Image (cartoon, rainbow, N blue to C red; front, side, top):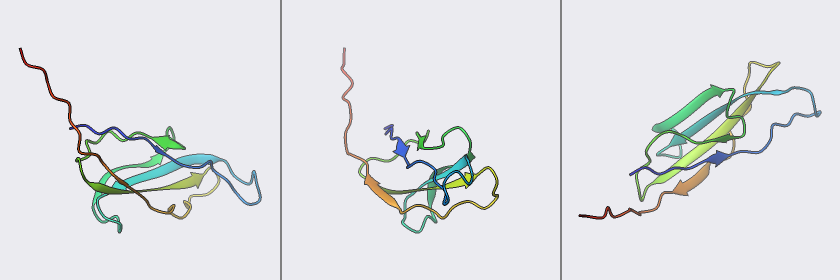
Length: 99
């Protein structure tokens, strides 16, 4: 079963403002809160800066954990990871008509 989700994050900010510009984003989805069992990730992604639709088939009735962090153009050091978002996939299916 294919479960499509889109993760969204806040806009890139620096203090003071305009100190740097948003270059890439790291995205991770895991089966555990410690992120030792990564299901899908997109690292140093310059295209999906504030939203990402993973291409993995997520299992139904399963709890997943997601997090994100940013890298600026002038720094090789990424931000800290975001707070962990927790979500559970539904147990749904589409019955294929016969004959």
